[in-house]
Image (cartoon, rainbow, N blue to C red; front, side):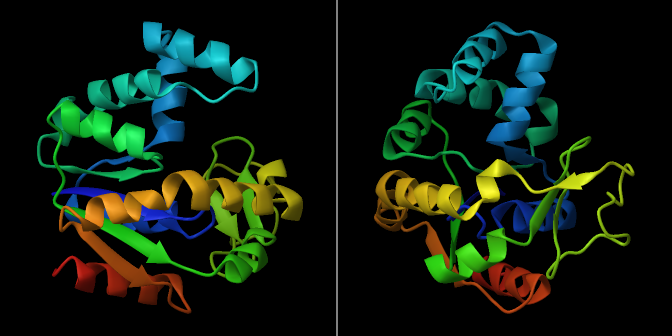
Length: 210
């Protein structure tokens, strides 16, 4: 089961990808995770990625795809995986195709920009372990404290309104065209955002036919 999760920043891709991964016993692979693990391990690709990140630049596609290909060829991916945040562009999707990587389903969470703006303002992240919460949808047991590690929850600069607006513009320009790319291959399964995390999960599983 090889799945791609598409959606605007704040659409809930990470939350839903983790739920699907846990249900089917497959790894959830995000760009952030593979960047962090490669940088921490000091791999050649990790060093290259860090040099761009430290300058505030986007990591080039060949580095991102190189790290992703290394990751999906690890033993825990033999029964499948779910990708979150990658591919981000048509060029990255084409590079995966060229490498012979195929997918079973591409889920696209459909949600309005207005809902995203409202949602992002409530998002909090643990500054220690990176776990994500939402003050309304997925609140921590204790306000301001991570359930997993007890770390402090903070609002990321990425979640400030002006930043969210800019990120949405980039998504519509660079990532949204992937919907057509995968629709042409008969893989796209759009799922309307639902009022709760659980209802959206059910809609995704229904779209997957499971």
